[in-house]
Length: 233
Image (cartoon, rainbow, N blue to C red):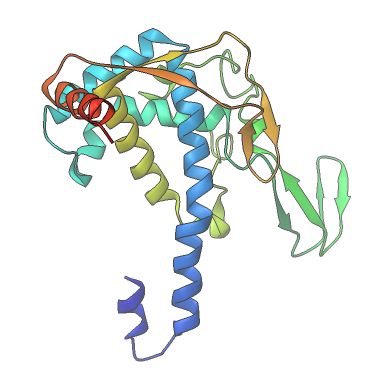
């Protein structure tokens, strides 16, 4: 799409623009999605019922074949799990917006040019918008849409993250693939907290045990891994 845009007569996208956009997708879209998936797997490992429901959906939708883009709308529970992980642990916990014109907001006068900080981590845990806000409840996403800007892990408006569709596609399909193949178990009962930096990362390594599930694709994968482990050299 970027290269097609370059071919337009108005020349609105230069070689440098195309390069910069590509770098944004590859780099900015890497740690954020990986962090979101880490939190999602951790949450699933501590909540057996949602984990099994996701695994059943993945097996029902995918069977023993590889997933495709067309499967994403059918993986509704995987999408709900990913949303709930993003709600509790948005990869970017705070970001800024510059004020274009002076405004009075919440009793405060904000001058033109000021930077206002917004925190998805705080707002998405507000009981005003989410019942039992600190609990991991993927079902809350199945039939309900939260109020606008009560859930904005990718930002919103004109400056919304350009990689949001890619991140959602990756998140849903990867979770479905992992849970179709494996059960996830925690290896320690030590509580994991947050390490808020540029992204909201776990404050320690998230180490999980994986047990292959009893289906053909998982059995073949386990046999392949076992062969690699036991092959001399």
